[in-house]
Image (spheres, one colour):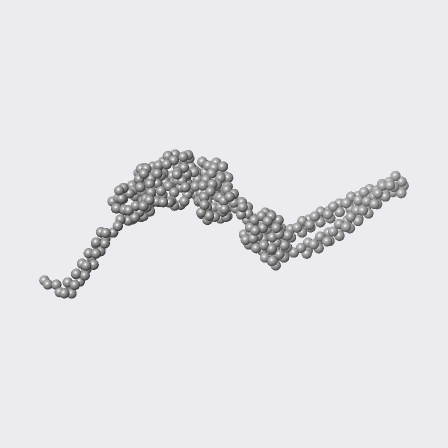
Length: 366
């Protein structure tokens, strides 16, 4: 059977296209992977716990009176000192009450002076027929009543002065106004909030600790903390763990003192690394080398540029590492980047890991 010129041309074209493709596939270089050694070093097991920065001093400053707001000199975000005026409320009515009360006090003083003069005069005549015992007793009673009326009026004036002072609402501590809740011209009610004030210099870390872990920690224990916003690490100290467990998560709230030199803000998310137990020599493998497949933990080992797969048994987390219980040896090179599509027996090119992710150091490992 003879091939027509058209069919011959098609077969020739396909052959010319296919041959370079296979030749290119055969010449394709081995994939490049990043490797790191399995370490055998003294290390301290630890556990990573998420947490957040919370303020120790934050309050909604409320009014103790009713009244019309005349002035609000500060805005949201302003820094204020302790004693600074936050809100001024109309004082006209209370000033009128004070004026009336001062008049009442002046009248009470005059009445008391008159009663005392009458009592003094009658006491001089008590041993004469000019005054009876009943009249003297009445003078004494009158003086006592007038004195009590004056004291009552003075107490009322003190209450008015106290109310007058409440018409100027001041900052009970230094801080930053995070919310302004009232504006000039609004009617303020007793108990209503005017601003929310936060002290940015008094902060601590709150974290939920598993109960079995909390039982091993004592006040004064230290932990490493990674401030995500600042990208820096520091050491924090345990202040207390509340003796209350969440029935669902089985966690207990813990509170940690922050180093005063740490630059952080309320609400910032942080990562705590809490040490458990004492330093011990152990095998360590980077977490990035471990691939979970079902119930197995798999690691790709590079041996003479050839991939081998190992099923490993892991211990506790130690920052960016896992403790290796079984399946690896110190000094073996394991793939930490580019291990997503590897297969046993595959040839690879390697480059050594020059950094770790995240940047958190390993306790006791250099």
